[in-house]
Image 1 (tube, rainbow, N blue to C red):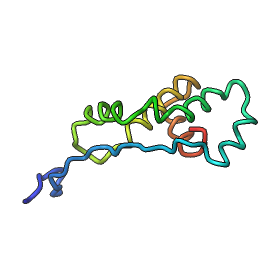
Image 2 (cartoon, rainbow, N blue to C red; image 1 turned 120 degrees about the horizontal axis):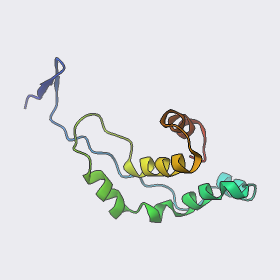
Image 3 (cartoon, rainbow, N blue to C red; image 1 turned 45 degrees about the vertical axis):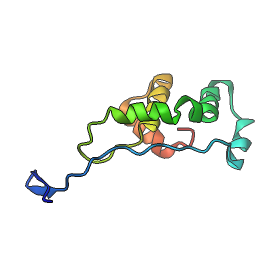
Length: 108
């Protein structure tokens, strides 16, 4: 079946939905080593790491995925974007800085 013509190219009729994010539940060896070294102001990172699988369970993720209209390239998993938004509010970083932190900082 031919796809729609968009921007001079033929694109397939494929629904672009974000994937579900399935983070690890248990702390890794490296994460356990870092936990004892964390300062009080870093406790939010530990809380989010420890509870992200419950805060962003599959039911909530399904609700977030349903908000996407399915056009364009597949976005990052909505649960990861939700965590980035929480951390952005906590740290006061700009959108650009959040992207950089998410790529470079393992706490993100």
